[in-house]
Image (cartoon, rainbow, N blue to C red):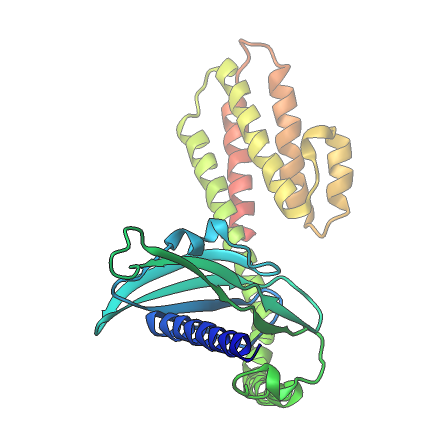
Length: 319
């Protein structure tokens, strides 16, 4: 009995030594580190989640286990992944950088899920096949912050952010500057306001001169093309009537084209016109109508037309 008990104790000690030797061997052959760019996230934030593996030269890591297509980072979303390898002394370092996005809302504690990866290392002397093993990377805790104005726990953030300035205080200098600009520009605004009537009057004056110049050009052309032919004289009277119609409409807004001679005389009598001016305008339409209904072989309209043309030019000079 005593002998069997000692045998059992020796076997247990041997097993413990083998397990410890395997654990120490694993820790020597491969190790990992985890870090994130921040320890808390707000809705819409993006963070970098990095896994750094350091392995011995004879260890081969299964890279497929770190492919983003084979991993789930829920509740986070994988945006992109980058990785690179470098030699550090007698070891090899693998760095996997995952860019994750957070769309969770409300204050809560979440985790970036852990993962299990496989690796191979050379077996003991004389072994034909390498030894395959697995290692687990534990979950990584994260804090989700709400967009509401709630107190922030110091343990949820890595560094304190500067508190925003009081909105009212930040607006005071701007409002003061605007008020100063308004006061300084007040005299200029008053001067501009006083100049508006003068500008409007000058604009009306320029428009008046332009219109009268066009009337003068039309009257000069009629005078140069005047003929003794009675048929041509009828057409010239029509052209003269058009000039007079535009003249009346421009200065008194009277639609002379749609009025008879008595109606036109009655409308013009309501305006502040001298009797001679009124008569000169009405006579153009009276003479034009008489000329159109005169016999074709009739004559004597040259002097009448020339006199009417002279009176209208005189009106343009006085306007």
